[in-house]
Length: 194
Image 1 (cartoon, helix red, strand yellow):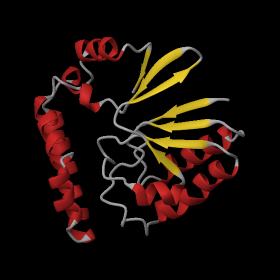
Image 2: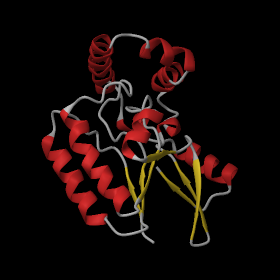
Image 3: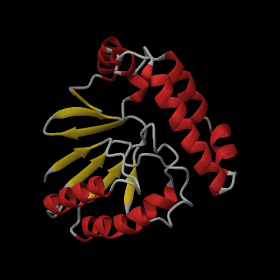
Image 4: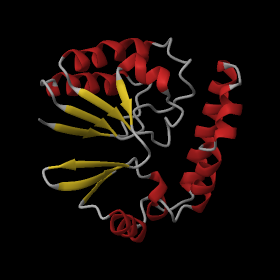
């Protein structure tokens, strides 16, 4: 059995080259009984499972069907761009949703899988924002808005994020080494994949 790990593809309706590369990747890994782990940010933005009538999703459905037909078990861990992805999407694509931190045992190794944005502990503004948008209350309020309003809000959030990130050093936006070491010790893991 082969294990494949991908993350941060940031697929969108506007980037056909990225989608084509993903299709090539999917076709290259199709082997019976493999496993594919998508560790977040499959999408550039995900504003709810009711936003599936797009060319991107229409192109993805047959790709994920190929995986299912070849017994490639596919897993998905939420990222900072697609944390609103839910059971409806998972069912549509035959994807198994993972917990924020998931332990995998493989070849006598204890492996921790996660997107990893919670390890960017030096970016205090982002961690505060993350806490807010990951709350059930915020998500319910956001998802109750009309689709057009959510699209508008997502565009504005991306503009604001891009503006804020220009003033931050790359060190602040990357995972904190001490946070990584502490997590690995606390969880007694051999390998962290994020």
